[in-house]
Amino acid sequence: MSKKPIIVMIAAVGTLSDNKKIIGDGDKLPWHLPRDLRFFRRVTLNHTVIMGRKTYESFGKRPLPKRNNIVITRNKNYIAEGCKVCHSIEEALELSKDQEKVYVIGGGEIYKQAKEFADEVLLTEIIDENYNQNLFPLFTGTVFFPEINESEWKIVRPGKKKFLAANKFPIIKQKSKVAQRALYFRVVGYKRKKA
Ligand SMILES: NC(=O)c1ccc[n+]([C@@H]2O[C@H](COP(=O)([O-])OP(=O)(O)OC[C@H]3O[C@@H](n4cnc5c(N)ncnc54)[C@H](OP(=O)(O)O)[C@@H]3O)[C@@H](O)[C@H]2O)c1
Image (cartoon, rainbow, N blue to C red; front, side, top):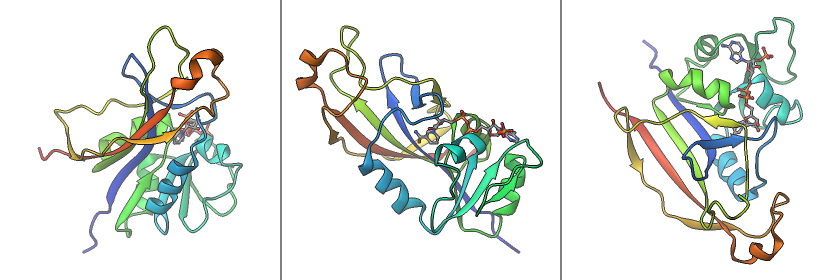
């Protein structure tokens, strides 16, 4: 009998004052952080990655190399070269059932629907440490990660806060205040609590 794969949702999320987890700005990432992209690549390499059509297109309509790419769309005629195309989360998971681990890699719509199936969540939390209401945020966004509620999820990897980047952010407008600004990150792992 085949075992069910471990389903992991992986994302980079930025939090500003309202605690909403920002993941995207329109059809783009709100930041360009090569260090996080390298981490994402290392974790997902040689695994199955499941993504929404908009996230796939945000990669320039190219499959992520050395991964089994599955793209979800409602469009029955959609072609994504080098990827498997399917039409629901359930179908994407069915296509992955012989895997040990599968990664749901976004975006917002797909995370929201995949959450009920997920066993684990791996978040790179991006922290704009000196942000307050009088400063411009270092990133803004319109697409969000769903709430990870402590009654359902336990932290299994608290993550250590580390310096990520400074002063490279095109959306900064108050230049005089830029000098003290920097981004930090920590990688936090969650597991679904047993019922
Ligand atoms: N920070 C991060 O870690 C991270 C990771 C990934 C993405 N992102 C960001 O997230 C944003 C994209 O997220 P998004 O929410 O706009 O789009 P998305 O989740 O990537 O894709 C949405 C699309 O998926 C398809 N879809 C959704 N639910 C479906 C269902 N039940 N059945 C069949 N198809 C379904 C639809 O495609 P059709 O319209 O073709 O039917 C829908 O338009 C971008 O800004 C991207 O940069 C961030």
